[in-house]
Image (cartoon, rainbow, N blue to C red):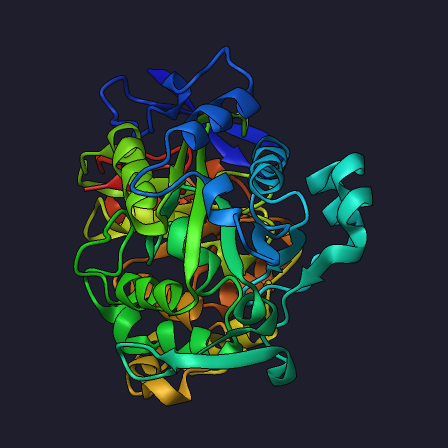
Length: 424
């Protein structure tokens, strides 16, 4: 027997399994660097991918908007932003720089969160030049075109009015956009709710190409690329981080080419072959992404990619903050069964997409095909059951129940961190 540890909240839960049990883990642990994160970023910016250097792009520009990540993303901004700002001022000492926080569909980022993200020095320098994007206020946003799939492309006015639009970001597997980073700084980052919902429509979410690790043929990615082009996103610095959230690689330059290079680099470390099993145990990588049920489909999709037909998925996520969104919860909980809920998603036209529908749809897609046993904080039992899943107080209890369903000799596959892998 061997012990496998699964990420849960701020700790790890051990489980003894047979020695031959497959454990699907990324190789991001190999992505260690003794170099300073700023040095890594500097080297990338000195060798931009299919782009002029940033200081050249800054020449003759009156103002620049740097799109930065919000509180939900562990982007090491303190490595990236000082180098971007230095290059902008090298090319144009008088350039007026603003920081636009890409909240997407998330809540606004607080002052405390911004200070923690930027550090005291950067925050104090730019505190009067920080704009927090609001997807839900039409007065803050401007139409710049139409997406290939039909919806209006509407983004933050501050980005539209800027002479130069650039962005920071990081690259990790994403459960329906393929990978994070790059074009996502625009859509959904600084896009209006109308544009986000059009892009995240049920038809696209249902597309088999809208999956973790897939860019080519992904309709969501295609719309995002178009939005970034319309927004004239001129330059990006995207990084890859290790398990300690430290910068280990950086890619700078053209938003599409530099991002693709970064994705290709990361893919080698995160892609794992599927190991079909009767019981698959997965997680959302622990804190902070397992704080609510809304985020849980991310880790569940890793289990979906390797569980056998009719197999059981055990999902670990504390969900101590509850649903993560009332609509996300009620769109499933208020229906008599999961099949009814799922069919309503499929019947929803693109222009009628509802907020947070996409995460609910992915959860329903999985639950309708597989019994899901969810290990969460005891206070969330009723919520888990409302989402048509079975609650278990511990991993041991979940395993006991899974074996009742699939038998004592059922095969097992373990995924200690479900959001860190691309299962193919």
